[in-house]
Structures are given as structure tokens and as C-alpha cells.
Length: 126
Image (cartoon, rainbow, N blue to C red; front, side, top):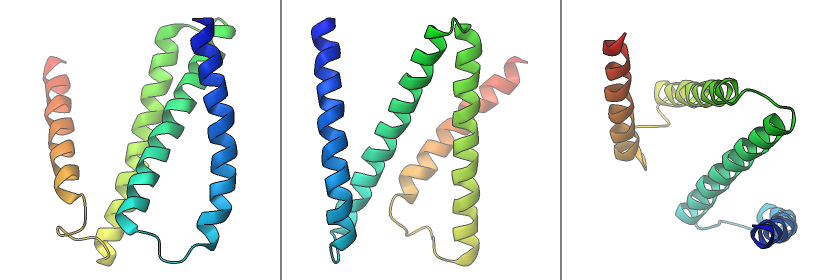
């Protein structure tokens, strides 16, 4: 376990340094590969959310926080985040900058259908 923790710590140091350097490269680059940039943004956002979640759980554990309360907090943050993103997407659709032909709309539609199905199941159980 200690070896794994050291390995993760070293990866964190290395990635942090690489990202700081890459930020400058990205700002000075011209016309990056758009699909690759999108994939990078998605991976970075997922990593950021995972890092935040782990950080909050570690902080809660150190302070003796109730695990159930912590899970409720994390769920509330996810709901806040998806709601904010949905509002932004609605604005883009209203402006016409996002259409059904926009990249990823089928995946979004499938994901939202799955979420609505599960939410409907939760509502029926009450």
C-alpha cells in the first residue's frame, strides 16, 4: 500500500509539472487537432473531478466526518455540476451554436435517457 501511495504521489508531481509546462505550449499553439483537444479536455475534467472527490473524502476522513453525510455532499456537487452544464448547453442550443448534428449529441442523448430512466425509478419508489 505504501509503495502504491508513493507511486501515485510521484505521478501527481510529474503530471502537475507536465501540465504547467503544457499550458504554455497550448496557449502558444495554433490550430490544435480539435477532436484530440476535446478528448484531452474530457480526460482532464474527469481527472479533476476524481482528484477533487478523493481530496474531499480524505479531508472528511481526517476530520471524522460521517461517511453518509460526505456521500450526500458529493452527490449534491455532482447534481450542481450537471445542472450547470445542462443550463450552459441549453443556452448554446437556444443561440444555435449546438444542434443535433453537433459532436457527441447522440452520446449525450443516450446518457440523459439512462439518467431519466433511473430518476423515474427513484421517483416510483417513493
